[in-house]
Amino acid sequence: MNALRRFANGIDKINEYVGRFVSWITALLVLVVFADVVMRYVFQISFVFTQELEWHLFGFIFLIGAGYTLLHDGHVRVDIIYQKLGSKAQAWINFIGCLFFLFPGCFLVVFTSLGFVENSFAIFEGSPDPGGVPLRFILKSMIPLGFILVWLQGLSLFIKSFLVIIGREESRQEAA
Image (cartoon, rainbow, N blue to C red; front, top):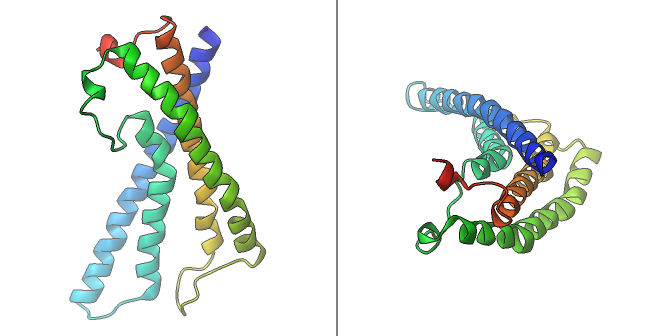
């Protein structure tokens, strides 16, 4: 059981580091949006590159940061019943949710996006707009990577939930 716990903690560390990196990309996005606003309203100029860079960074942040968000239990869900349950019942919900929803959903997105990404790499896809962001295929490759990170974090949650269910680990509630 210690090996499972260490494995889950290793996944947590990966997504923690990824989340810290994404926070710097978020700061970069703020600077890009600020520059775009200043260029538009002060100098009355706008560049396609800047506008596309905004949504490329935004997409990157959400795709790559999703595993970090799951690590810190930040995804939106209906907690009306869940929050009132005991730790074992919550662990069962997480365990079943990962097994029947998160894992198949992540697999589906990764599997179906690989051809999409492969085609984008094959043609070195860039922006269709003149002056847009080149190398769009790099952003598209973040789709499967982001969902792999979510899947890994789901695996960590699955393992931790299993350990709570069998009584080998206390939940976050009991630890606090």
